[in-house]
Length: 439
Image (cartoon, rainbow, N blue to C red; front, top):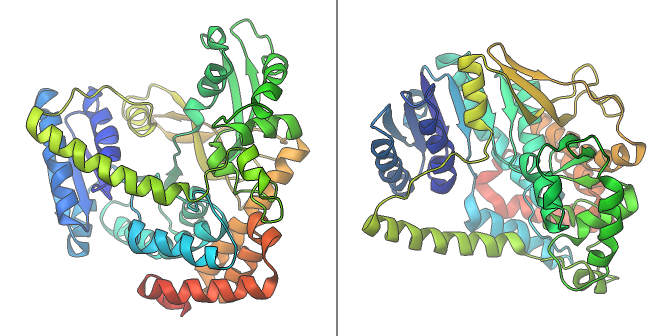
């Protein structure tokens, strides 16, 4: 079996996913093909993963492929392809996505999923993943493409609609959603045997049901505790808890993400909301800088003391592969097309995040039915942007980029139409060769 990792220079993430595969008896003897366009980072990943492979018993084989000219060979014969690329990186593209909007009075926290940052990231990423798809159709047409790249719903949705490649989108937030919620509310005693039902869209999938091991609804107790946190001192999760207070349900992704997915919290006319809800503006650029420095220090330390023992992480990728190889079913929260209205009050062309059963015959999305109307309405404000950005990438019409930005809840609530268009034009020009077809 062959498992190809695209963007293997993302060393920490590659270590988790490939390391997880090395922990699974059914996967550990695979060929692990590492691909990246950055030779230095690729070599760092190779060194670490080779040390891990030997520590795990020496099973399998690691192969490295650097540069676009070697991409097809990296993919040739793959059974599974994991995608973790970042087109344009922090410098220059993330810097551009934050600094130019800031000139127009538009602040962001993360900028990788929705908003003007998410739109630009999508438009520069889709051409690259479609090149992957073209190669896959030639050299590994039956492989499952596991996409971890944000914006999840836009990249995955485009691949599912237009690439012809079997694609499943995966996020980190679904599997830790209820545990994090219960722990922060001091309800750890409810963790064991809990039952949950989560559905919606990526980064805004709703915790529709949470019961303890005896089937008791935990939402009444949760709701009794949230006011003290929201109205109290600084806390990292006030926005999501405020969702419970105003919309009745908790959602999967963090508050720093969700602060920019709507028109409620980051408002120039209400600057006091930033402190009230503890919203970390410019969080992602800071995180990029910190992670780079942390990784450099960690790598140097590992070269001196050796690679630490890897324990299987909570990432879904290896569990999916294992279920498909062994036939033993495993349930995940996956990003799939809303075909046949799996969520009945969201459009079929939307990419939704819902429970999926994985077994030897593949990925089987579960029927959800209708979301609570207010939850579907919140999702639609994001889906509008996603579908228009996908349309812009498909048609190469700049007007759809304008429309996506105009309909983005945060952007549209802060800027007028003429300013939005001017900002989009400046971003496209600044991104240069990363967006050549829109210049």
